[in-house]
Image (cartoon, rainbow, N blue to C red; front, side, top):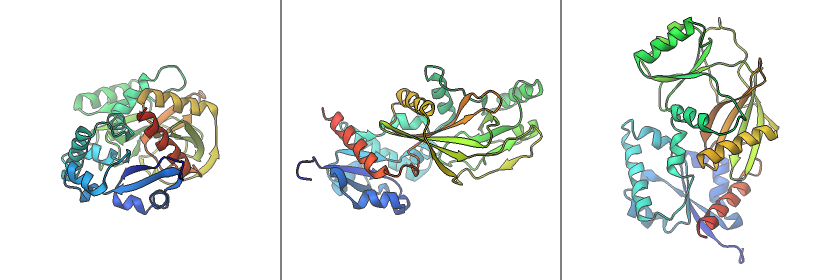
Length: 306
């Protein structure tokens, strides 16, 4: 290690997340000259206290998306945490955040994600029809479109906020009654049959992995309303250049280096359809995750200091 520059990298994530085997590996090893230091924001009182506790840092790797979602909802802990981070960036604007906070913020709001995807140049992928239902007028408009055959059923309904901030359940909706039957604001997406296959892309810096998983079944317009758990894993490794190109295009648009994206192949048209983008996913299909992350962090630090 004598000839390798040593870097101290703050790792901001909830304490419970550090019990994950991969996070333990990151924190207990200084491989490749990268020393990750867990930062528990619950134990920090101010930006200066942050620096006193954890010392000088060469970069900060974070999972602040949860706090970004809950801050505008009035959560006291999230408000305090984000205020500390803003003070810290004001005191030390040259510390690189992986990834930049404003770029990550886009992925905490499903409406913002839809706008971002619509702005990606080229024609690599399609998007499902979608609508933001945040008012009585918006709901009435969608019901009219459904009755006119312009917005096909069934649809998939999700909360506007990512990171589980809302109690609104993810559901299939097969009737206009279900569309208007809740007061909660949500995003409604056309459910596209895709043969039960989902392609999960993982972007880590310059590297992109695509893994194929079993997905939700094909549905008819008469399907009942169903709530489901999207966390059940069905890992099968695969790599496809087209999906990698989609990941690279989203990366160029967002400026993000750590994110996941989900793609389906529409059964009727064979169109590639992007159905989700999320920040700092599990990367569990990346068997060499630690080495790849360390190499990426080193690259960010050394590029930033040029």
